[in-house]
Image (cartoon, rainbow, N blue to C red):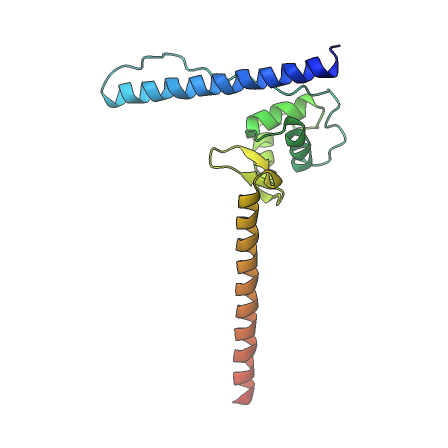
Length: 169
């Protein structure tokens, strides 16, 4: 087994490969879209998705996690950056998290769990990251929650005021 420095270097390089493949796939799709908009045939017949190699996950890495959300959080902390639901699913199943055999339902359950988890943030590109990684978005969410609480308090005050008016009459 390689030492920690070699393993770390491999993971960094593998992550670069995945990002490069994703960028290449995006460029190919853009070329095909432009060609299509001009009535031409797609130039790239096959646009492959990036390989799913990445963070090294032990077979028991997520075996003690009790929810999809906690397993996803643990994976994201290990990975160090945002991931798609597909990447999260692949990693947590490789890491021993108990998922149902129905892949589609499991991915839907992960998506729902991540959406409900206040420590997660769904990014505009559809991937998920830990909210703590995005301080500006965290402040935005806190401001929205504070505004909602203030509106609820205001509604209660108005409700009490209306009740007092009814009692007076």
